[in-house]
Amino acid sequence: MTKRNVLLIVVDQWRADHVPYLGASHLRTPNLDRLCRAGVTFRNHVTTCVPCGPARASLHTGLYLMNHRQVQNWIPLDARHTTLPRAVRACGLDPALIGYTTTVPDPRTTSPNDPRFQNLGDMMEGWRPVGAFGPGQEYYFGWLAQKGYKLPKNREEIWLPEGEDAVPGATTRPARIPKELSDSFFFTEKALEYLKGRDGKPFFLHLGYYRPHPPFVVSAPYHDMYRAQNMPRPVRAATPQAEAAQHPLLGHYLDHTRQASFFTGAEGMIAGMDEATVAQMRATYCGMIAEVDDNIGRVLDYLEATDQMKDTLIVFTSDHGEQLGDHYLAGKLGYHDESFRIPLVIVDPDAPEQAGRIEEAPTESIDLMPTMIDWLGGELPRACDGRSLRALVHDAKPADWRTELHYEYDFRDTFHSRAEGALGLAMDDCTLLVVQDARWKYVHFTALQPLLFDLAADPGQFHNLADDPGHADIVRQYAQKALSWRMAHADRTLTHYRATPNGLERRSPSAQGESA
Image (cartoon, rainbow, N blue to C red; front, top):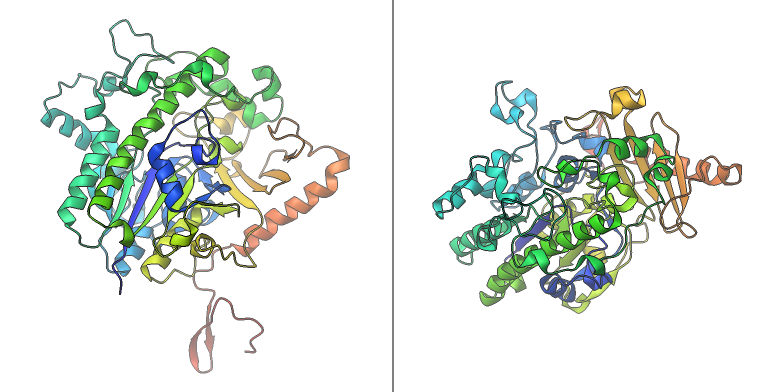
C-alpha cells in the first residue's frame, strides 16, 4: 500500500470569515493561502458545538453533542466512544499529539483522586503526546526555563503587554514574551522535532496551536502588523440593550461576559467596549493569526523539502470561532454564526486536479474523523454521525448529502458562567439546537422561546421572526427538521445487529426492505 501520512492542524478560535482565500481582504495569510491553492477550501463549514472541549470531542469522535455528551469543558467524555486516536491505531499508526484536546476522563475508568479531575481538561487517551500544552502548561513553561527565559512568579504574566505601565485591555503593545519563545513557536519546534525524528517513516500528527485564542496580546512584530482603523466594523445592534432584547440567553451573556477573560487583568464587561476598542482587539487577533500562519509555513517547508507532501493528507481547521465584538460578545457561546463557522481546508494528494477549488456544500466538524480514517483505509464505527469528505474533495458530492447545517450548545452552569439560576432553568434544560440553510436559521431551545431568522433579508440576525404569525409555517417546518435530525442520529452503535434463528446477523447500514 502507498505510504499514508496525516497532518491534522487544529488552531483555536479562528473564525471562518478570517480566511483571505474566501475574501478576507483585511488579512494576509500566505501559508494558509498556500494550503488553499493546493487543496479544497470549504466555504460552508461549522463546528457542531462549542466551547473547546465539546468541539474537540465532536471532531475526535465524529459524534454530535447529543451523542458524545461532553457538553461542557468540565464534563467527562464517555470511554465507550471510538475516538480518532483509537481509530488511527487500528490503522497501524501511532498518533502523535502536539497541543491539547481539553478532555476530562470517564470517572468510571479511574479513581476520583485522579489529578486530571482538578483541571479544565486533559489529554484524550490514545494520543502519544510529543508537545503537550496541557493543564498548567508545565511543558511549555519548562521549555522556556530551559531556554534561559526568566519566568515571572505568576507565569501567566508572560502574556501581559510589554511595560510596567501597560494598562490591561486592548492594546497596541507587544506581549512580554518574544516571538522566538511564544507558544506558537514552541508548538512548531515540537512538530519539527517529531517529524525529523520520524525520518520519513509514516506519521499521524495532530498539530495544535493555542492562538488566536485569548488573551488578546501577541509578540512583536505581529502586535502592530494590522491597524485598528482597517478592521471590519462589528456586526451589532445600536446598543447592548437593543441586542439583549432578542433573547434571555443573549441578555444573560451581555450582562456577564467580562473583559478579564480576554485581556489579562482587564476590568469591565465586553458589552461596554466601544468600537475603537473592538477594532484594536480585532487588529491584535489578526496579528495572532499572522504568527500562527508563519509557523505553519515552517512545517510545510519541511514537508516539501523532504518530499513528503505527496504522501500526506493535510487537514487545516479550528475547534470553534470567536465573537470578536459582534453582537457585543467575545468568546464562543450562544447561537451566533461567529462562534460556530470555522475554516476547513483539505489537501488530498490523491486529488491534485482539485487544487484551488472552493466547495460550497454544507460540512460539519463531525466529518473530519471519518475523512481521515477513510484516507487511511480504516473502518468507521457504526455510531459515527459524520461522513467522509473525500467524495466532496474529489468534486463528487453524493446525491443524499445534507442540505442544512446543525449545531448545538449547552449553557449549563460552569465556573465562569451561571446561566441556570439567572434563567430559572434546570441543568438539563440548558440546551439549544440550530438548523440552518442558505435562507433560514432556526434556533430551538429545550425550555426557552425559539428564534427564527430570514438570512436573505437579515444576514446580521437581528430580527426574530419566530413569534410572527406569518412565519408560523416556517417555524413548524424547521422544528420538524430538528426533530427528524435528532431521530435519524440517535445512537445506533448496535442497531445494525439482530438475532435470528441462525444466530447473530450484521446488516449493512444501507440495506433496505429485507425480510426477517
